[in-house]
Image 1 (spheres, rainbow, N blue to C red):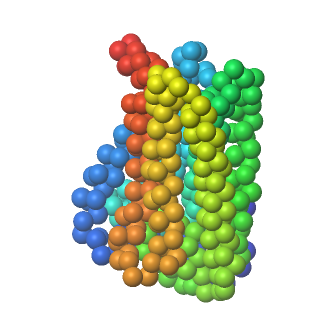
Image 2 (image 1 turned 135 degrees about the vertical axis):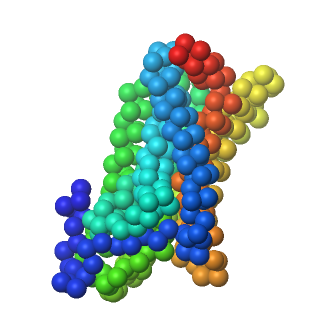
Length: 316
């Protein structure tokens, strides 16, 4: 992967490494900031690994909904693990340098997992739509094999959308002494280090944000429109409550994932009046809070999963 992203247009005076300075203006507080960040990451690891382990071992959970929850857990682990270890190296050991190849590779996987995460949320909305609107045909429309295929489609889409980002930047000449005021290699943060014209990279990054978030949120909204229409035709309060429980968990995950991500992306491009440390802390929390909260949300709102996790922990 790093060979693929190797910059081909660097001058002899161009840098071989970038410097990630962490959170500008709050360098003296890096150690304190690392404490909640570390706690969020540890909780995220424990929660998501537990979900993957329980669903993998319990055959009764080998259903589309729980397979999708495993996919969500994998993308959550991917995004947080791509970001936090390097940030902690900066906070704890002052290891601020990162190679250009390493920076572009981190950027690729960070955005790859983010787009995959969005794809999983769309598939989960479709899953809930079929389960509520057409329950008798649910197993026929969404067998496990089809869920796996949808997961592969989401992965392919993410690769096709995100790969041009590092490739466009790899052909740019970077200025000497590239200091990135961030804890990780975000697309726009790296683009601003270029001495060349980054118009194409800037436009492409914005288009990806609009297309991915716009398309995916539109599909999710359409699915929930069908769900609401189906619920209005059901008179049973018990059926209403059961449907709303699973949908509530999904809606909470969407809010914790998409809203901070969109806000962070837009402020990075247009929020010149926002203090840099505010934006950088928010950007880090985007990749830490959602992975930490998602398994908790589904654990609280999904009784079958909660019971199996309790059984698994007691057995251990």
